[in-house]
Length: 332
Ligand SMILES: Cc1cc2nc3c(=O)[nH]c(=O)nc-3n(C[C@H](O)[C@H](O)[C@H](O)COP(=O)(O)O)c2cc1C
Image (cartoon, rainbow, N blue to C red; front, side, top):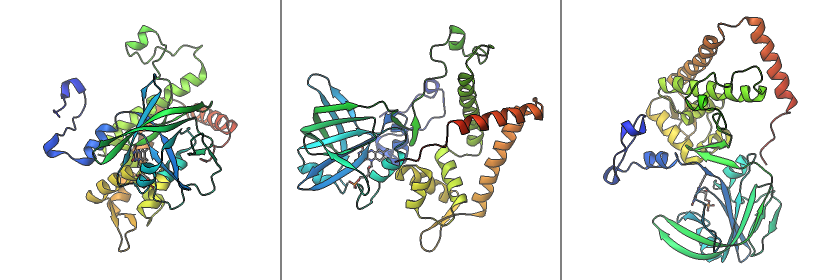
């Protein structure tokens, strides 16, 4: 492993090598690679298992092969080891809760789920954006994981948007705001799409992108990354909760939430009480207020040039528009 080149990367460098491998930093580095999210199920002698996995990947078209890797320390490792088959479920955007459930230590992950049986006997979960049923072709040693290669026996694609996972967080796939635009756009001109005839939704989407990107700088100025920000707000709203409860509330994978908590505890923003529950310190609460104030100031700064009546009109319009789309669907 070599150190990254800052001038090429054009960003702050976080590097490591074999001798000083920092687990967290290595995970964060790998997290720059965006993936989908799958739940992979199997069954052996009447025992059904399932784990959330983003190591899934296509391997070969001819013959049709896929692969994924399973942590040796997983409770379901032995069942996967004995099962001759597995089924990959590519999760859809409204299945974050399901992803969290199959990544947890819950005793019965299938509780309350209607499940079918696949061609080779693996449990099949509904509401996903694709299923790929396989028989195990081979297993390869992969350090603390085992690599499973599967031969595809059956696949199904559904008209549902797939869930995305990147930088330790769940995300949605959206067209890049520059996609399909003119050369002017490629030259990074922020005004290129601002003509009277630009579709309104496109303008809303573009605004969202610019607003979110602009705030990232503010968050960084406070020394927080977005996961620490979620955890900070999650703890402020739900004092004295366990790591498990926090993970469920902020919809971050356990390792990512644990990393963020460890950073906040090390920085004196949070602490664990005598029975291990998490709570923000006065410093953490103040920091949350500072972020809130930054949001308010950031908004004020951008809206200063507009009259209050125009701002209020846009606000009313957006509230009405959002309510027309109905309340967001609850994760299944
Ligand atoms: C988004 C995401 C992706 C994950 N990817 C994998 C993976 O590819 N392989 C793996 O072994 N664990 C992965 N995990 C962790 C497992 O889902 C987690 O360890 C789970 O508890 C294992 O279940 P078990 O102990 O009941 O077998 C992932 C977790 C999340 C949230």
